[in-house]
Image (cartoon, rainbow, N blue to C red; front, side, top):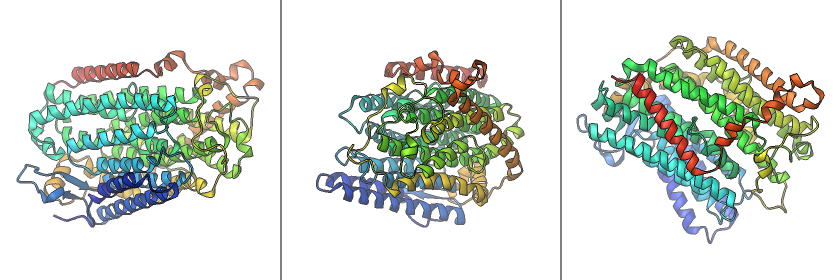
Length: 610
């Protein structure tokens, strides 16, 4: 077996050990020292993950067995870390976003008695382990570690009731999701006696019975809670509204998307053979939930005037688009979803960083309070340009790289005869871009005569920084500028798509995954390019951007337009039943998780039974 160029365990051990060291010394270290050490540890983890990524690209996939416990025949005795471009790429992306978040928060965001830096490193370790592990139980362990760190980061400001409430809602809903996932794992263990994903898939083979179907339902729904898919999404806006800005970057930039990665991973590694004859029904179930997510997320995104909640609903909408892409099925759809994931994480991270700058300088995060305030900021032109570019990116319009993922998604949908996906992308991209552009027109240009207010906007949010220092430093601009500009740069560096396509082909091929796990040898697989679909995707992105711009303008200049043309103003008021779902009560959120689980399970039993 080929060994990785560096121990993959370091991608988890380095941030965990660093977090332990910083926690033990936090009472004696100054804030600047904690920031510097946290940033150095994150950079070291980024170097490790990037080295693993380069090794997997140049030398092929491999498996690292912790403690040297190699498989004995078909039995996986130990815990394996699968080193291939997709998992190592996600771990590298997690380290990159964490590094940018720690740079952005340098002596800037309140750290809760220096708890912030260790918690961010624990969060990084959990995301890295989640991306790399080949063991189903350890996938759950890292899922829980990620959730625990996120709970604490969300409620970092313990002296304020709102963060505690948001953290409590987050903890309750994601703990329920964890119990659901654990129950699904227990069912599979009872059926196979295995926890390694490859061994479970080998043991199940083509088995298709109610126990297997129920286990798949529990695992998928548990991870869809993390992915904020309707109706499992309610925790996300509450958490984003109160979490510190750097934490929101990790929530929307990667944590939500890792839920979708887990859905794809368990499907292709474990259940691909079980549901080979029911792939049409499986894809339609996922597609139905994805469509509902795009519609609700897009509508609620435009209706929000609290910037963090608005971006949270945008994440929900785009999570639905990624699930819809995954529902198209096959390695091409998987590659397209991952390409979209990367670009969306960069764009959404940049927008959250920019909202953090506004909150710091203007002491508010609500659209009415920020009206025309952006023009008074230092670096106003740069901040405004980055914000508008972020809005353009959400529409999957050129020159940002989301159009690459949208092109692959549409091409995959054509091959599998999945209809309506392009309309979902136009709607979701247009609505979320319209919301961001409307905020930009109000905040950075001062257009229009005022902003429609709502209950969420009136609640507002307390600043994350001390009032005596509103200065914007150059390093506050580095993080959002890097995210947005990198999302543009990768659109013109398509060489990475070749690696992603081949890696997705290997991940989506269950026999190839089994061969890699048991032999440690890479199985070279290729799939065709979707380059010819990019011009059409660019056209659809420009159409979504045009419709979004018109919608935003109809809001901004509503007082100058006749009533029939005030569509944007009408959409800003939202829909009362959808707002009522966002009650803030954890009992309601658990009820909706139960409803979603029942709907998903019923559809699976009706359309996917043997």
